[in-house]
Length: 264
Image (tube, rainbow, N blue to C red):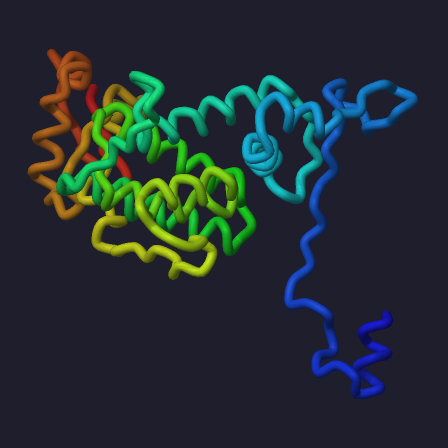
């Protein structure tokens, strides 16, 4: 109302105060009730920060669910988020002794690394724009899982990851940025970009059905032809078992979606 009055008076240049209004949901107590001193279910943020750190609390609040949803607080959930931050930290810093030595190297990225990196950048960027913070964090968790499993810490992947993490866990993001050898805050560093070529799947996972019931799955090239796809589907062990001794009366191939074999 006041903005419209100011607009009519010529003091502001736009008829609306913002382009989009987002109503954030309420965080309930662990008993799924509205937090209240009388109910004794109020969460003290100072205690959470003292125990887990400000980054973990901030990250958990964004990871709880969609921004607009009403969600119950679960302190055990902060544990999980803190473990994620610890795992991310160990990609950068050694935990074998008390030296906290940087373990990031200049090794080249594999094709799989490139796919994980660029898909993470794309997902986090688009989810930030759409305020889908929980799914952006999920994408970063997948990134950490990938490089933890392969046991490598390539600088080419971890430098942009520190930038992606910073809006969610700013204290850790800035610390990692400094340990990577950069001076100044990363808040003014250009946001990382992605290569769309690494974000496109080369294969499609086809469900293989026999008489409409799924009997197996098979990964096939995106541009696979019908004959090759059908031959590969019939070779799937469980599918072949359901075809044995039966007459194949129809073969259905829907490119990019499914394969169905009809028998009698």
